[in-house]
Image (cartoon, rainbow, N blue to C red):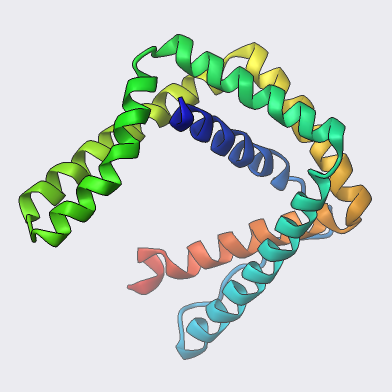
Length: 192
């Protein structure tokens, strides 16, 4: 059950940012990266550093926003709805969550024993469990009732974050721009 709760908590947190990170002030155009050069790596490092600073700043704002009891209550209700939906969609998740909690100890034992085959097997098993959780979570997040709750939570979160940090939407937009720049700079087509 703890694993299901953790999965639901992660889902609620991860769901919040992408939906409104697409908001971009009309004046914020996405810069087009230049052709790769010696300075492209330097520019990418600068973008990455800026993205890290923005992420830290937004995380602080997010944590401050969660001090609001109404927002926290909405988040908790959303997490409960996601967890209930996941448990209803796949009743075996509780058993899988318990299994996933035991795997790290088995990994430690396999490492101490240098059992490469066991490590590979545990890695595959954990990947399968994670994939199943993600698939069920995505299915639940597509349900209309849950989508409405997500939107309501996102809007309340957005308003609370803007009340704390008026630059929130600009910071989110800049973060999106930086991720796009980094992806374009590091894409295989750019390296050729």
